[in-house]
Every structure is written in structure tokens, then in C-alpha cells.
Amino acid sequence: MSNRVAITLACGDYEIVRPLKEGLVRPDGVDLTVLTAMDSTTRHWRFLRGKEFDAAEVSCSSYMIALDQGVSNSTAIPVFLHRRFRHGFMFINTSKGITKPSDLIGRKVGVKQFQATAIVWMRGILESEYGVPARSIEWVPELDETIEFTSPPGLKITKLSHNETVEGLLAEGRLDACLHPDLIKPLVQKDPRVARLFPNWKQEEIAYWNKTGIFPIMHVLAIKQEIVDRYPWLPINLYHAFNESKRLAMKRMENPRITPLVWYREAWEEQEEIVGNDPWEYGASKRNINNINTVAGYAYNSGLTKRRFTFDDLFVPVFQGRKRGDEFRF
Image (cartoon, rainbow, N blue to C red):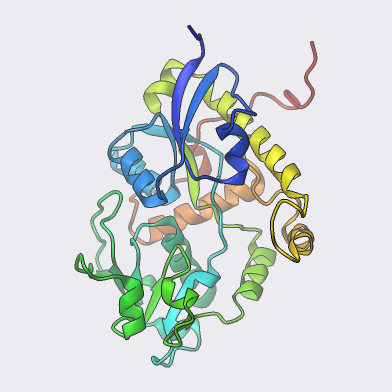
């Protein structure tokens, strides 16, 4: 019988967790069962509402809201399995005369969920970088919120009926624009009725990085509080295992034969030139602290939380002393 702690972890099926999923990396003292066969919104709902898993990759904003409302059963470690620049996920109906961000003022804009971290980032970026107040827009969410919240005064939110989608209504012109966590089907299918708000979205994202140093964090790694209370060493061991998994994955992905893309190596080198060799860094780095504090401020400003969280409020410490762990010695 194993003396290791059995932990069920739900997360995305990413290259950076492949070594953990396949057992190449094993957290010290922990037996992991890794579950990857569910979409993000389902996973967030099942962990934050259903409390089904011991640990899970969850929406950063929904985690904050649950914590703010006192319904969270978890804490988190600074492991960020999903990041994404977001300028390229703002979509418009091409018949509406929208050519710049300020044209969204007074419009009806669809979102998957109002509180989804991707949407929190996009609303915050539109307001802070382009002068588009969130309260100047009528927001139209499609899904039930992962954690219910009371809409603050002055914020217009109108929920879609069950058989409607923001993608469909955007193409039909019943919505003026849409902010979405994923590439929407009409865009992928080259529907001429739909386009990106920023035609030069990649340049906008690079400019945003150069200005802020932010590669937006979408998800955090949450662990049930009862497990952390019982095994206070476990978060640090998990943190180190995720770091090792990422290190091995990045080393593997340097090989251009891994991916069937013609100019893959050139794209890899461009990424390193722009954002450095570890854009997916974990832990309490200055950039990660700024990243989390920024999205926490956006959540607070849009009324999703009554408290303006900081990095230290959201994560269990994984620091184990300066220079410790860098070189293993007997």
C-alpha cells in the first residue's frame, strides 16, 4: 500500500503538463490522477461549485469571486497553465461601422460569461488602454456565471435565452460586437459579416507586452483548503513538480520536428525575441505579481469583487528560502 497522498487533479491537456500526466514527473509524496477530458468552463463549475476534485486549474476571476463571497473551499498556488493575449479575441459585426475601440461605446456586446477571466481582461484593457468604459456598454452573456454575483449599479447586463449564442447573434447583426475566450466559428469559417476589432491584433498585443510586461494570466491552480491544512507541504511539492513538467515540455518543444508546422522554429525564435525564454513562468515574480494585481483590479472595478485582491491574498506561499532548491546536495 502506497504511503503517498492520492490527489485528483483536473486541468487542460497541455504540453506543459504532459510529463505530469504521463508520470514522467511525480510530485514528491503525491500520487496524481490527472483528469483532462472536460472543457474549461465545465471544470471551473465542477470544482468551484461541485467541489469534485482535490485540485484543479480554474478561472482566475471566478476563484477571486468565490473567495470574495466566502464560498471558496480552496487556496491556490502560483502555477498558471493558461495565458493568452486578448486583443485578437474582440470581434465585430462588419455592417455596424465599428472601426476603432471607442466605437463600442453605447453598443450591445456579447460575452460567453461576464465573469470569465478572458472577458475581465478584455473589458479592463478596453477601459484602461483605449478609454472605453465598461458601463458605457450593454453586456449580453450567454452562459450561467460560474459563481453568481450581484450586478453593481450602472452596469447593464442582459442574459441570452438558452437557444441563442453570442456567435450566432453577432453574425446576424443582433449584437454589435462580441468578446470571446476562443476564436468564434464565424471568423474561423471566414464569414464576411464578422471580423476582428483589431485587424493588426498581433501588433497590438506586442505593443501591450512592451508597455506593460503582461502576458495575461487566465487560470490558476487551486487546491482544496482541507488538503492544504492536512498536508501543508503538498502545495510546495506540487509547485515544484509543475515547474519541472514545464521545463521538460519546453525543452521538448524546442525541436521543430515535434510540430507539423512549416515555420515552427522561426515562430519559436520570434517568441523568444519578444517575450523571452519563459513566458509561462510560475511563482511570485515581479511580472506575475503585476499580472495578477492588474486583473484583480479589473475584477474589482467592474463590481465582480467587493475587495481588491492582491497576489499575496490569492496564493499560498511556495517560497522556501533564498537560493534553496537551486542545487540539490546531500
